Length: 544
Ligand SMILES: Nc1ncnc2c1ncn2[C@@H]1O[C@H](COP(=O)(O)OP(=O)(O)OP(=O)(O)O)[C@@H](O)[C@H]1O
Ligand SMILES: O=C(O)[C@H]1CSC(c2nc3ccc(O)cc3s2)=N1
Ligand SMILES: [Mg+2]
Image 1 (cartoon, rainbow, N blue to C red):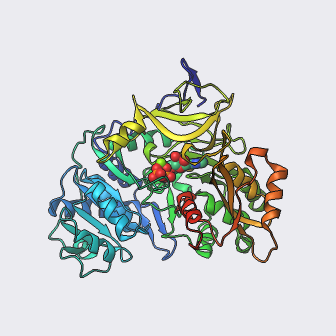
Image 2: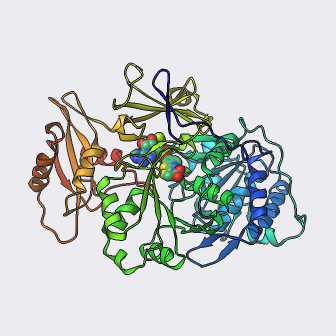
Image 3: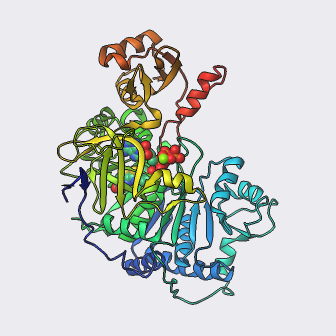
């Protein structure tokens, strides 16, 4: 589908012609019926244990767990928390939540007590699913929040909370149900919230993004395109955390397509590479740090990755150089960048066979409208003009839970204002420049840190880099680079400064200097946590 330009410089990705999912009774029923239809196909593979799960196993288990949730008093639109790493039980808990018409609130398993408390007080879950890894911390924080009535643990328990059920015991106990079927309650799809996902907390405290059943159903209809190879013969791999919007939606979309999804609970170099080799993985969902790993790490040469056809990368900037290095080294035929926000359900822009210029994030998906505006005046901009990206469409969130002020700031007359600066070219292919909040203001110039970082990553002695603005009385801010050197190399601050001087325009020079560090602080999806670096500047003693 090619984009069109509507009056007022509005770019349109075209209509979603498919309506199977959107016209369904509910999201939960859609997933149940899809799984039932795929029968004995393998749909999930645990890369650690090697366990394989068929669609009929998933269907039967979701039905059973849905009955259990109802017996525990979970009603339509109640909130269920889900704090676990990628696992078959994560998928069962989420889909059973959808089946009973509840709202599912995934929680980042690396959250501290304070962050768990913040997230719980956003979504206020009645029941929380936990894994062995998270049960103790969740129990401790839940005991301080009266709205939590019960915890269902995949394994392990805790003395910190009285009402903890063991999932496996309940699943084996026929007192709950032996009925082979379950009818999901009919949903008010535009209002009923399916997911409350926490944004990544890159620019501040995470926000509770409410995604309605229709947000997900429309995304499913836009995503499920006819493919040459039947989806049942496609093996995908994901290590993207399912508690994050990107990971969660890849689980849901692949489940509804009947593909075989190999998952990892967390990234481990050998496990990641051996899973690709062992399961002959064809497509992998990626984030930039994983792409940099594939491009640069020596261990990659030890594995046969020849089955890889497509790498789908998003969530943070991917440099063209990294893309080229991977193609050169591994020969992956297709690297597809996508751009999305928690607030847009899944990606709104994604590259395809016809639109995949190096460094672009692709073109609009069907059902999505875009406009680029001057962030100061609101003026509608045209092709090749840099401004704030705004999107409208069926995947745009209902709003931030408990925060109408931030919702009104983010969504104005139906348009999601992303806070990202970008532009589209004459072919309506989009390019992300940076975030408004991250731009370095040097003497009136707006310097995008991502551009200097991409340049620094091309230096053979530099393993990773992050650039921020160092406050300066005269100039406002001076670009300053935090640099991680490759192992056993000689590299001075002046070498780095000279390198940028030779390759970048004057405003982008590292007048703020260079600080060598052991690692760049990032969140799981590879976003640089610049606020941590800014704090480091204020307190130089703090170590990274
Ligand atoms: N392909 C991409 N290239 C560059 N940036 C991207 C890409 N995909 C996503 N992003 C960035 O990720 C953001 C969406 O990320 P997410 O919703 O996970 O939370 P966040 O915006 O990082 O955190 P918070 O909103 O809590 O500050 C986008 O606004 C954009 O800045
Ligand atoms: O839609 C796709 O095929 C893949 C390509 S990259 C992508 C992304 N989805 C999201 C969702 C939320 C978010 O914060 C970032 C991304 S990138 N989705
Ligand atoms: Mg955001």
